[in-house]
Image (cartoon, rainbow, N blue to C red; front, side, top):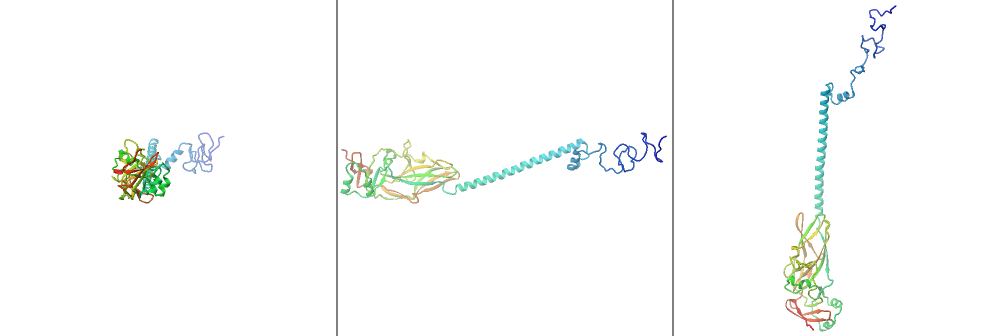
Length: 358
């Protein structure tokens, strides 16, 4: 006998007895029946699992959170909006990166330029070079005396060759040179004598510069006091590397004394001195001849050129002026030292002398 259902309720079509409870599905066991075929109780929350038909994917959640305007659109429209947004973000990021790098580069270039200019300013703030000056008194070729020798002094001097250093020291002789002054290529108007200085030029500047000029500044002369000379080395023994100022002609143009084809020509027309930027320190042997005058000058004024133009710097004799001695226009006595003897000679024209040959 078939079971009856509740009054007013039809028996289910699948042959199961009617009664409280949900058909196959996820309906709530405590809820009332939900009607035929819904499989869900009245108390089920929205968005709950509906068997996979209406469940939101992770991508949908991301799109809804990041791009709510693309939520609910069809896949093609949604993808297009996503691509546009992603492309815009990438392009914006690239532009921002490039702008940031560009600004950093501009500022770094500016900072580097400012730093470089500051370094250059500091580099040029002090003297371009330092000069070490030393009188060259070694291997002199003659000695000058302010007074002629007495007969007794002549007796000590004239005769067989001897060491003249004690004699020269006792009579306050000044050692001088003559080879370059007497060389015919120098075309000196007077057979005078020169004094020499060894000048070492050192620069710690980072920037390179070139010395291209030198002159004796503030030259003042008086008639020479020395009227006696003892020549210890003959003419034609060769020149020395460096330069010679002949104050009887010019205080502004030093002449080349290197034994080359340019010997006797203006020094800086054929040579220059490179300093700075790690260049090898320069060394000069500077000779000065003054003929029949005794001369003094404040300094050697050096002209040099760097990236900022032409400049000058003075070289002093260790903080003092320079001085050079000549020989009187009409010497009282002249002597010549040879390997055979020391003999007295007759003064001749233009500073020359006639010595007996025997």
